[in-house]
Length: 141
Figure 1 (tube, rainbow, N blue to C red):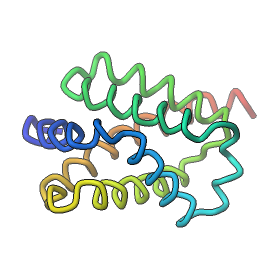
Figure 2 (figure 1 turned 90 degrees about the horizontal axis):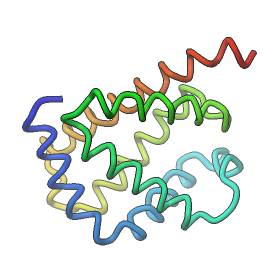
Figure 3 (figure 1 turned 30 degrees about the vertical axis):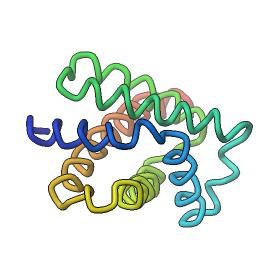
Figure 4 (figure 1 turned 45 degrees about the horizontal axis):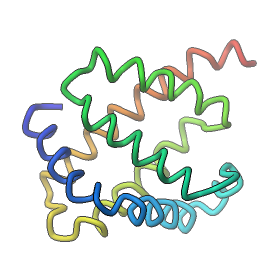
């Protein structure tokens, strides 16, 4: 990600942070509408799950210009998600729901450059997590 993309992600996320609960609820609503089969992967309090999601996105956004700190966090997260049954194909589903949520949540602020910046960010997050999960995959088999 370049510096401009980092700033676009940060400034757009700042608009969502005050309504994080609603954004998280919208994300899961969109995810399950698009992929109802994923609903069974989530047990327990969805509000707490949404809080974790928004905290993780916020942490990633804050560390975008510090890859030496961000990458280890994402690697651990990817390994943990593999243990939850998350597979590489799920990341595309999550990415699509995330973009739809951002589009709805940001409205006209979700311009083409902002969209591309989020696609770049999510690509970094997803590829790092998938790669980390593949490292534990043979050990789990």
